[in-house]
Amino acid sequence: MEENFNIHLGKKLRMRRLSLGLTQTKVAQSINVTFQQIQKYEKGTNGVSSSRLMQLSKFLKVPITYFYEDFRDYKDINNETFEGDDLNYSFLNKTFSSLSKIQKEKILQVLRNTNNIEKSA
Image (cartoon, rainbow, N blue to C red; front, side, top):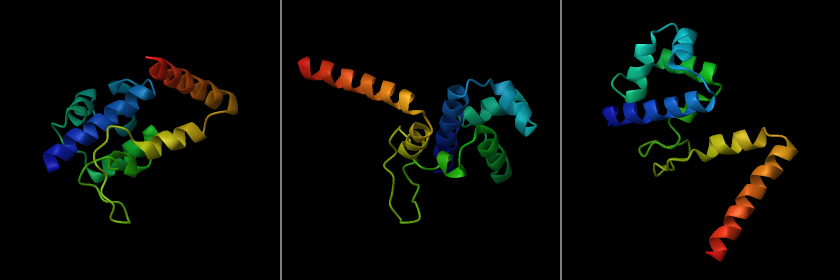
């Protein structure tokens, strides 16, 4: 399970880094490691220690649970198992909530348009 979690965490790290437009070097500098170490974290070759995970969480502006939430063996405080979906709904909800009203409307319009296209197909 540990190896699988390392790969999962690495994917989450990479996804968040890219969504913020950060380089591996920038992330590495923020937690005082080499960019090669970030590469190893992202590939799941190396595990991330708890102190490094805290540093990454703070720098990437996500709660530590972000790295666990959609891991198939993770259980939340209510002992509900997440099924390993690729989407992190909690993170998406928090991100969407932080958008301006205009930004939210634009996203909703795109979704409505997509839904209309699917119905007509």
